[in-house]
Image 1 (cartoon, helix red, strand yellow):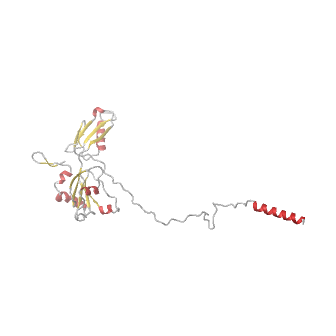
Image 2 (cartoon, rainbow, N blue to C red; image 1 turned 90 degrees about the vertical axis):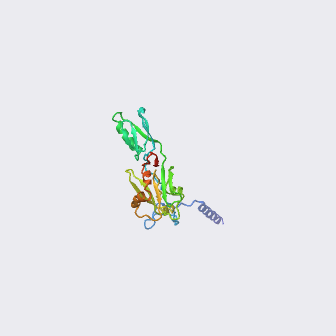
Length: 264
């Protein structure tokens, strides 16, 4: 009986020790490979929902400013302030600068005139530093013609695009072709070029070609689609609005008394 009791106690002690002992941890090789050489990394299911693609926002860029008749220009010498002058671009497009004489400034960028002055004054001054600044802008205007409710000339204020100009002119008439609007612009060499602007694509988000306007730009809304833009630009000044050529081109037309018929 005693032996049975001792054997029972020993058996109970062994079972208690076995149940209370911590189980050995199984080592896991997180960098191990599965069959076929694939990494043993669980991946989340791919999101099958399509991410909406938003159109790129394109900011219209204006051409560099070119001086025009009526602009007041400040010529500043950093180390020789006695040479500073303020000049105005005359109706003939010229300015008078000491040592340089007559310089045709209309259509020129301020940086271009600045380089001409610096080059000339370097003959009499030691390394002149010159800046040319337009201190007062002439009254700049743009023109909207054709199939709009209120065609005419409008003051160019800040950032104005083709769409802004059409809206300022009261919008298109019933006959206006919004997919063939012509932007006419004078080039530095005095010639004119035309660019087609499609407002239908612009409003539908298919195009970002909402061009910014420069002074004296012409926006023309036709009744029919214009296939040959260059031919139209020639006809615009010879047949459609010949008198406006002088104004848009920067020239005045005077009557015998010397008063403006068409002018700035």
